[in-house]
Amino acid sequence: MVVGRPYGDVNQLIARSDRVFAALQWEDLREALDAHPRIGERAVGDSREAGWSRGEQAAAGGGGDELKQANVDYEDRFGHVFLICATGLTADAILAEAHRRLRNDVAAEREEVREELCKIAALRLVKLAEA
Image 1 (tube, rainbow, N blue to C red):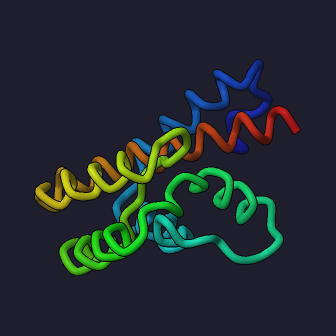
Image 2 (spheres, rainbow, N blue to C red):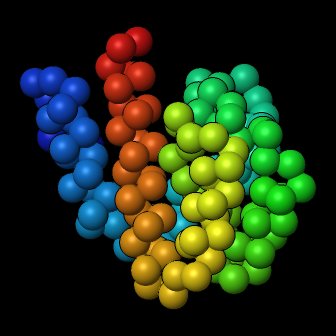
């Protein structure tokens, strides 16, 4: 991302971010995954990123035991947290996505993870640009 600076606007920044994510290997994506809390669990700490995560997952808190179980089932199946760009989604919509994605094969799910990470990164880049 640094190599491409300066960016003319936030759209150029997001386009560069999308290209970077497209080139990442699974190990790199996995590192990013490991930094995310489970959906429905509040990120801890006072960092800017933790605050963003709490805001992005605000609606997921209503998922209750069903969402907790979906997280367990997902982690058992794929070996990492269920990641979704939760901004604007209801707890029911998040739960439905978790159930749908549990039917993915590993390769398809890794691509969905990549797409969701891209969406989260884009939202956060907009927040950074606005700050």
